[in-house]
Length: 497
Ligand SMILES: *Cc1c(COP(=O)(O)O)cnc(C)c1O
Image 1 (cartoon, helix red, strand yellow):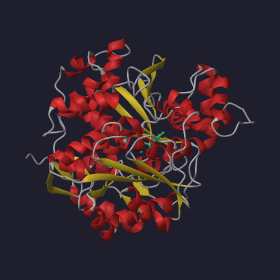
Image 2 (cartoon, helix red, strand yellow):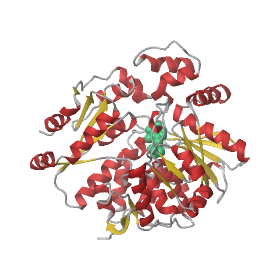
Image 3 (cartoon, protein in one colour):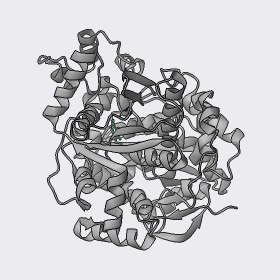
Image 4 (cartoon, rainbow, N blue to C red):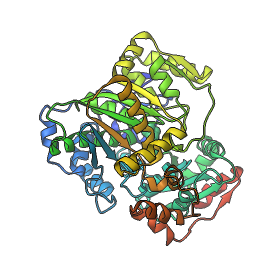
């Protein structure tokens, strides 16, 4: 077996691709990363240009996944992105706004958020990895969610053989639409429960379950083991590289850019997974110039990129772009690994400072490289809403709050630098997932309750509600469990009887 994944905290560790995906995290707490980043051959963009999205998935992923046959990957890509699961035939379409500005829409999947891009294919990669490692037990994925991830994971794992999935969400921590999306989830292998408390209660409850050895033993007896679908799993980062390559090919094909012409990308960022994938695409040979990192009021990454000091000791804000409300961006560790010239000792040192003091300062060589690759900016809720209104009024383009953060940061970046490189703004959620904030931005003060707000946004804008959200009206509530955080274990044991 080829051993080609290492830990960002220990370069001597070697795992196969299937082990890396099955384990998720290195035993030393580091992130599993390819020992060598493959480079695309010079002709590859011409080749990929003529391919479907599914074919591009196989083309890109194949070079990272030794031990997986192209035929296997072809069938996973077909199951994940084919069969009408995405409402747009391009899967990740690029929309032109003007000659210099394009928008990569990553929300045409079954849950209307960009998490679908990875969570539709991860279950296939994961079950195949378990087979390759001779794991006979059924995997049970446990998720604590503040919204988007839980639904995308449920939909991705729905009815996938030899998997179970159980999602816990905070009773008072998700929107009405998000809750409805989860409690109406279909599939024979899924479970959903609310937890009394906030997101931290749900998350610490799940962490406790993972650490509970007696529970693990009892589940093993029943033929199960627990795993997570966390965004640091390599199986979630890899599928995200594909859409950057795909966007570039689509733009070549449409004549938006010419062969070899560099583009910038501007990414609304939380855990740093999406923009990290853009960096890997660049390393592989996609002509990407600057990576523009957009944050909301939780601007820890903006400060880091601009000053070289990462400091999580600061106020936490609940914003209208909740999927970016984050103070520790876990996937940044992989970026530090690359920027330091793959210095595992240094990464270990920074991460232990982060754990101990909540902050670290990178050395001058990393600061220089960081500035060379990245630009960063942030924006508050008032500016976010203003951008939603501006895009709608000036271009009749309706965007969600996360995407609006990126457009705001791009506008500021262009004002400051005068850089007129063609730029792809990454759009991470359908505006219909955040109806209330979007309507408020458009000046609509009286808003309808529950699912009726979907119709209201649709009537206000003339844009049809995406089918997976429109369907919520007719869906049956399947799950009504609300548990105390101490009762989560009972919940797991009942589901895995
Ligand atoms: C998860 C998420 C993000 C942040 O992506 P990262 O990969 O964590 O940086 C941005 N927007 C939306 C809508 C998301 O769901």
